[in-house]
Image (cartoon, rainbow, N blue to C red):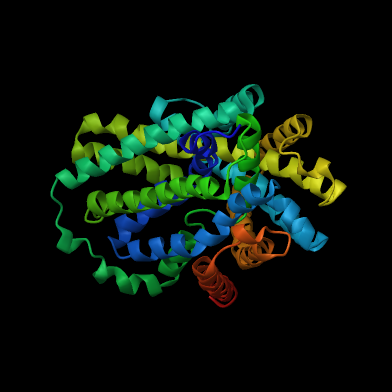
Length: 426
């Protein structure tokens, strides 16, 4: 017996919020806020454009999972082993570094908020242990509940912060940032622009994460979502992540653009400046509000990433081992391989934090390079998957979404070539 439409929609809601939790991290808290602080509202249209042009390729993950009952890795395997292998290379080249980055930023903010007198590596270990226990005990259900609570707290605190900032009646004429446009064409300005737009709102391999979360949500609820409901769930999370990016940029413009401060290059240092500036501008009572918002941003990212990579590794192994047609490859979750991968990812991230030292920045550059250069290729193979013959015809993207996909492919290719040219030739 099928559920009523609203009940079926409620059953589908969840993976989109996990995607939003993974997206709303350093790119929002630090990069968006800094964009507003240094350039006013100048970069807001570019941020929104980047989110629009990446929309199709991230939406294709839940679309494919709902239409076929498979995760996107099975779709890659149907195209060929090379596509699955390419995704594996991208994942192994970035996962430990990204896990380490989001965790150490969260650790820095936790130390700032709670006044912890411990090294970032020690606090990071505690955060990862908490994530591991939550995921091992509660699994997807615990992750889903925790993320809904975190995203609710984040939305409320951010909306309150924006309302308070706008209540000060800022001088909009001074926030356009037009006078800062020439700075974008310096080496530092161009590097910042590429970093801002390149990972805004999130790298494209998250489409695979979303397809796995959609599968797992269907298993937990016993109600496979329709394509329509899966897309609605995705849009809730994606639009929310886009609006939060705009909100943090607006906060940076209103509170920091005219401050004349020299901003820290580190994510934790900048976050501390942000919290302190709130307290100075809005009153000391606002410090806990923005501190909760900042810590919620980063913990949501760390929790989502800590779940996603083990889930992806487990699914990669199944797709490579069994092939696209074997039912064993299509199971949404293998608890044993997931737990082994969870321990492995956390151990690898902690080793990087402890051993990398001064080379940590170089490792971040490596992960950024892989993500930038792989984006147009991932976009293309994902587009192929959802337009291929094995995709149900009724679920394939329509003319408007196909047109937006081609525009996005042109944007991502041009963006990657520009970034590569800038890195090679300065």
